[in-house]
Length: 256
Image 1 (cartoon, one colour):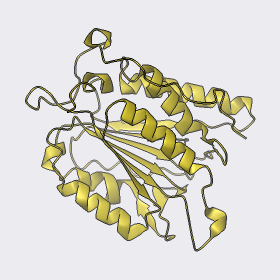
Image 2: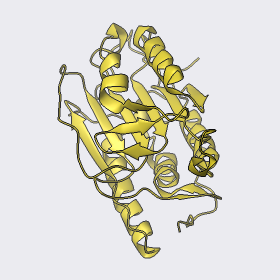
Image 3: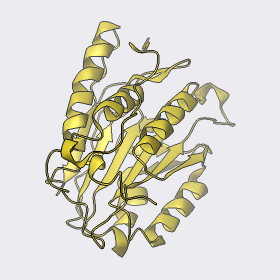
Image 4: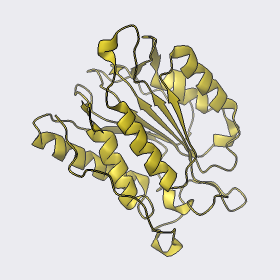
């Protein structure tokens, strides 16, 4: 059972200082010279009315931590609570048409139960596919063209991986809470080791390190912590054309 090593993840309590940011702006496109931080959306599948045993107790702790972390980075955060399949598809349709002209990218976080071939369980017990139903439709949005799409998934995964279909050269990275064939652990009182560790690392290094480096450390830290408790969990990632470092810190001051 996971118990956080720190009672509360650290807060970003210092102002943005451009001298602290290492590296170039990365893949955030030049939008009049001042792109805003990425937009952040959280799909929180917590309550499953048809089968209360599937309720994901503790997920609200992850939502609170994520909101605090990304709002500290001046990201606009929207939480979609307990969506069914129609709700998910309607939100994706909305994002596919939404103007993200001033946003440096998009972060989508999914908290739910998962299955093999990248299937996610919605709150009405119907499944949707991470690529076909979420990621690929976002490629059609011209205001997201060339910008990083960061998907963070807290869910179990089955023993098989979906075929690597590439619809375009759009840059994206998918960050999973576990590897194929492994379980993803969540504590009812504290939330999940993956999300809580991610928030801690983003709070500490979000201004100064690129996201890829942060996630590399998250993977090692989650494996270390979960192994100590006897419930090994190994996060994983899959990326395409996500070659340049992406720094949230480069966009923190570009908000009104």
